[in-house]
Length: 394
Ligand SMILES: [Zn+2]
Image (cartoon, rainbow, N blue to C red):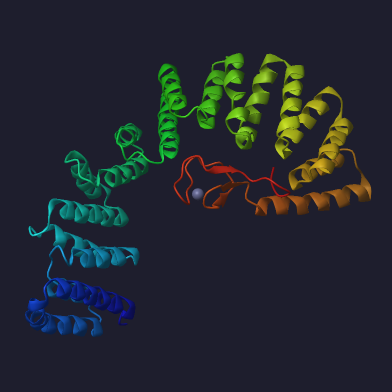
């Protein structure tokens, strides 16, 4: 089938290029048009015969590359890339790089676009080489090149290189959006801390976590990892010190630390301390998970009925499906006959509702899923995913 969209795109691009050329070089218009005519119609015939690759070649040849028509070539290449026509976009950008008539900044712009083509094509090694060159020669496109290099190193999980590239970006006058870059660097350090923990290298893990907090004092991930590390070593007080920073760093993420906090207090045998801590948190940051943890403490200290009353009290103030589910579970333990059958049915329905609903979402792009990703799979933002709140969540 003839690709009408592509045809339109190329014709518009060339028409724009000719207009620019005509404006600059009125006298040469007739000569250009004589050259343009046969190649233009040759390209058209390729398109009509469904040979889009040959058509792009014909159009590349038909529009001379010079500083006046550069933008047209770049616009066509970028439009092709956005349409997913990566091979054609690559050919257009490679054609530009082969032209000595362009200035150095113009060649660098074409090189950056070619690197973007390679990234889209998954040819990360080739993209990396082109981008590193732009960084080394201190091109005006260095910030963009460093930004893409960071994305590549993230994909390759080469965290040391990602930190190095982010540091270079930060030292420059163009270091806008420093907050997001600090958050990203803290996550790179946390990734390295996780690697160290896998190797049982506790000293290196602590060093990496300290660095993460140096980049971003609000790094919940660093505090959580620190808590896990100390808890695994039996240092419960140290673990709690790290974990109890989390409500101040980002209250929305404190539910992620609750299991570990409870495990630390339980290992210390300090149930009263845990109950006091949960009460304080509930007063400031009410959530389903906190109320359920609190009810577990009441259950341990008293019985199932007292735990059910605790849940019911929080449910009245803040109705959520998770708390309703827990309340039904507690009543099921002590019901019989028809009441038990009906509660069982209710529990099945509530379980189905909970299974169908995601537990986490991205504050930036709305991506939703059932686990906490530190890097959003939707928009590739670090630290943008939080537990969902409201009736269907916390
Ligand atoms: Zn997102």
